[in-house]
Length: 89
Image (cartoon, rainbow, N blue to C red; front, side, top):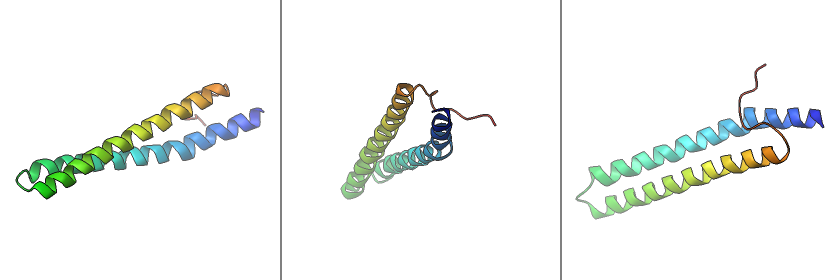
């Protein structure tokens, strides 16, 4: 069982954490781009609508990503694994 716990820790730290970080960065950039579109093209209704959609999808992405982060920590706690953190080697 200890080998499985070590394997799961390494998978979470070396694969899942970077993927979550990358997706969070993409969602944040999408949100910022939507804000830029919304403000920069205040006179053009179609660009404002595109900006609103980008803002909404960026926020939806961030909520989903941080929800997944929370679910992963709950699952790790269920199996008595430490929460997501770096493994010192």
